[in-house]
Length: 113
Image (cartoon, rainbow, N blue to C red):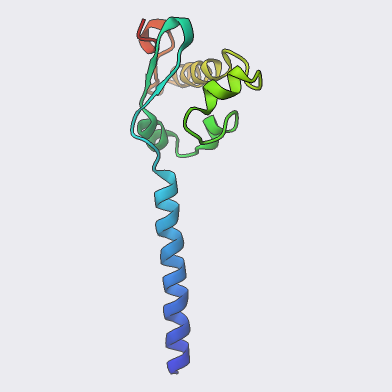
């Protein structure tokens, strides 16, 4: 009986640690400033997107979860210049068509210049 309690406690501890780790991993920066090239910088509400989309792969399927990676990949020619913007705009336009609350779809609403 005592060994069953010990095993249950160990299982509970492992599962609790996994749940806590998953919560920590999901929390990225609240806001990120993206390099928008000649059109100006883009204040990006990262946490808002995490909360609303719930799936990091919607964006991070085209670039890894690493600060500064978009600019780096573009400089290396591994990410097309407007690929990220096209992904954002496409998602926002799709939401508009579905009658859902959506992010901006015009240049000036994102770019600060």
